[in-house]
Amino acid sequence: MDADAALFGDALGCDERLPIAFSVDPFDTGAAAAQALGLLRALALIDEPRDGEREECDPQTAELARIEAKVDLLLNLFGAMLRERQPVLPSTAVRWSRIGARFLTAAAPPSTSGLLRILPDARLPQVLELPARLIATRTEAEGVTVWARFDALDTALEAALERHVFSRHRRQIALARRAAAAQAPLAR
Image 1 (cartoon, helix red, strand yellow):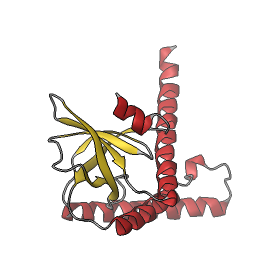
Image 2 (image 1 turned 135 degrees about the horizontal axis):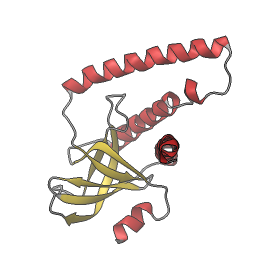
Image 3 (image 1 turned 60 degrees about the vertical axis):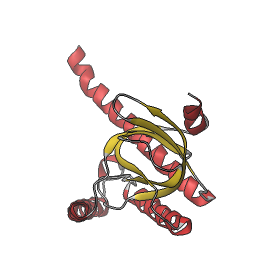
């Protein structure tokens, strides 16, 4: 489909199951962009190589890994508490890139421009809100497939979004390789 080519033809895409919704509520594009950039930068810091991915094994690194694990636990607990207070976004299969996203929703959005609201990481309760406009919709038996292109992203935000999608894509590949390696001894 042409909409897929527009969103994923020149950009790395990532397929995930994420909470996502298209909102037409009034918004401030500048504030939404600043908040999105801050969230993506925080996620990049959180996703730096973990203790299992580090090569060095000195005592200082081991202590840092323990502190990171404790912070992760606190983030998970805090995130769970805050998610209980926020409206729940529907979770669905999403393909997204630095350019936009394709996802299934219950009904077609009432407007062609708004905010695409994505919960990019279950560890944090903060929603990524990106100005977007619909470029296509298709009615399916399960609902409506929506193609939304991010609108008016500055260079820094687009770069941060591209790094985040790349990181998620790389993580998926690593998990698939580990699963294949775990299955390989069973196949013999």
